[in-house]
Image (tube, rainbow, N blue to C red):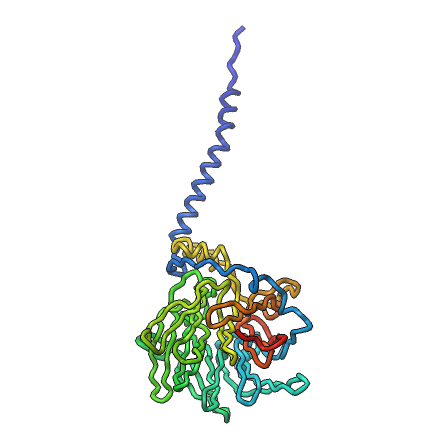
Length: 409
């Protein structure tokens, strides 16, 4: 009897190769997707940046919950003062606060943006009144000049001066050309003994549509430090390439400026007098977060507000322009990424941002950490009579922290 051969072995062989073919096809598809993703233009053109190792979180810088200590803290103007990026004291002893107004409006269109004045009574109660209206842009940094005018950096408007009678004058208009480049995103302010006004430009993304995370990855150096002469109206660039220009202070002897180079975790120094006049160097380059406003108090303590801590993943990505560009594409697809003004917050979670007090020799004196989540992303800190007044770009209210005694170097 003749036996017919079976085709089963051949069928089994075909089935055995099928998963391998599927895997190869999947790899080909994945490769095409990856190549296609790489070829898509990135929203940023990154410049490589290798960050210095962060100051260690030990000693003074060890993690703490100081800003949640209910025995030392008080929130002033909760649900009334929104995004108080800066605070400053006037000659009258009142606290002047930037108030972005209606939190449902954006920075460009807000009709209720203003400066508020907070007056404290002997028993620590306080009253809040409107000092000046600044519609159409969020007020950021505040500083008084020798004549009692309140200088205000206003996004989408420029650098303005508010006279004691409330009259508002624009000193440098948003978009005004300075050294061939349009001025924009006025941010930090300092006033020299000779009347010169120093102001920083945050960056040159005038659309305000890009998240801060993309700017961090790009490290383009589009911020500036500018000197403005109020007697002549002349403005000139001192430092042309800050990653994001922010707070400024002047040394007690007027010999140099310190300016926050925010996205590089640095504080730069610009020499005004002496053999190094007109040059810059890095005063401190290993901060554990993004330096926002700087404030030098009467005891010569430098108050540095760190808006957010450093991110190890971002620091690694920034070392390669290619990797940073690809990460930028991904972040662009995440709606609202980096927006710290979200109302959905867990108040029991650890808040971002901290306050660091330094001597003018760079020695860490004090670190105040873990703010309430409604104040996530701190922006400024000012010491006055043994208390520290802290602002935020991420929420509402001014946080008052009581020290045991005025801090000294």
